[in-house]
Amino acid sequence: MKNRTLIYNFLSLTAAALLLTACPYHYTPAAIILPQLIHNIGLQPIKNNTQFYGLEDKFALKLQEEFTRGGQYPLVSADLADGVLIAEIDRYINQPVSYDENGIVQERKLWVLVNIRFWDKVENRIIWQESSLPGVHRYPTEGRSGGITEEEARGVIWDKLSRDVFKRTIEGFGSVTGELQKRIPQSGPAGKAPIK
Image (cartoon, rainbow, N blue to C red; front, side, top):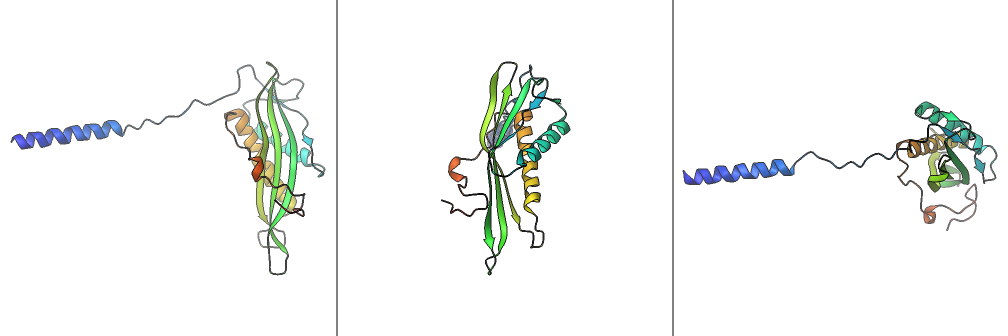
């Protein structure tokens, strides 16, 4: 009888300890949101530091679409805005990554690197900035099945970058998504220069 009581007490304590340690509590940090003084967002004209004309226009259109779709903060001209996105396209690299037996490019990797920051005009300070925010897309070339053009690959990159910028601005500008400079190819626009 005494052994049963000891076993019962031991099992009760073990079960209680398991229940207490298996608590479903999970730490979730508070979301970082824009300061309350910011009621609308503007987009400064995007600067294009590459030799490829028109990249800034396509990126600006995608950013405008993303912020309009989000709807939380009205998109207004940069002159009237409380917060302003300032972006510049820093690098554009389209490099071949695989060839067939005849030396014809089968797959390419497109890199677009953007420097971006968010300026709080009300308090005249930069809230967040990120150098070399990457837009990377690896794609099969046009002649292959499922292949796409360089223009279509750019469209995929503009979609990715605009979502990243929107998410970083609205949902949490404390996250880091940029690439380390060591991993960024230093080659020319078509990957003709050797990559070190």
